[in-house]
Length: 174
Length: 304
Image (tube, rainbow over all chains, first blue to last red; front, side):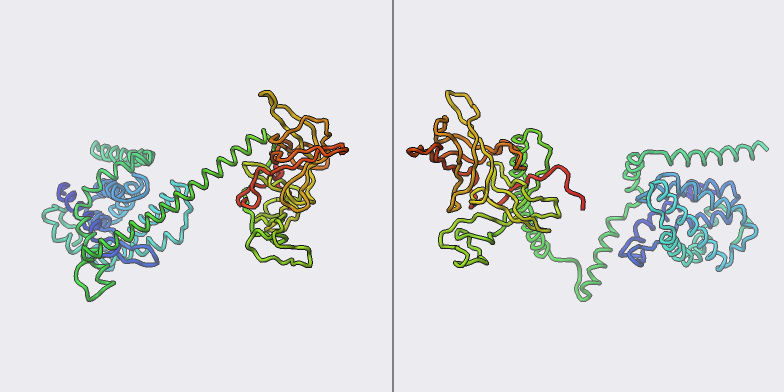
């Protein structure tokens, strides 16, 4: 795998996420909160379905740290920990997953984004000694996950077109 | 095998690094985010412009582009005027607060550490007597009210809810105004020191040859017409003169603290064959103009 291409792709995802998925543009306002997809995590899931668990772990850590850096609140390290954990698990279980199927992509991305966002909200609230509001943040995380999951098949298709420059291992799911 | 070990070490290091990042102080985290923000959001200004345009299009579908320069200017001028109004109000309020703080400090200094609460209050329109105020009275000639009669009682906008009690002193930085006579839940009635029914022990304080000294004590009460205070019971042999000060004097019957300024002697006569002086006092506080006052209440409000 070419790490430089992965870094560039991740950077593009972050820039798009920060620039276009904002309130008033492509973020969806529901009940006073804006729902945004997690493009970086979707890219991470795509890579985790193609890479070994060790590489997925490292990719997850780097993506998580980048996600921490661009978020407005929360402590650094929470995202890094959650991303690497979830992507490691996906990388570990990838052989049993039919990653080429749209439904599988939808479900995996939904699950990954939901777990990471929910855990991130709870961890941030817990570390800042704020009220947890578990169900409220679960709802927000579920909406984010749903938005990400709807975009996932299209993003997977786009990322699959870059398999050559990324030099992903042969035999991985298309 | 060595490769697998190296990988495990890297993974463990990354987990430890993530854990270490959690303990970074919020100030450092915030600074790092400020530094990296332009790197990850290079087109933020551009898309922000789109966002505003989009919002404008939603509000005014038929209109192209944002507001004109003239509209912006008009909005800015209106905002500046509103801010100036707010500043003027804040300035006036600050002036009032400073004045009240000065009054409070002066009163506290005069009370010499007496444990008490000073409750800011305002005298409200007279209800029980008067001809000086413009308020309409519930009483008439049948109750003896005549044109030119003096106000001897006033209302106050504080009551039992703030722990006021009958007999509490009402004062300003200049001196004593009156005594709480009746306490209601939210308002109370104040008997001014010029009320003929007001009785308080008072002491003459004088300055002779550059030295201050305490003089004789007597009973101060309002005159019959309710315009001034007279001091009775001062022997004609005592050293008393016009301009001497009158202060409250401690007595078992009165809850008033000692040494509150009541007024100054404006008339001091010795009538033939009378054993006592005929003394009239002018209150230090202009009672007809008094508005903002303080209630001298006990240190702890009574429990409901």
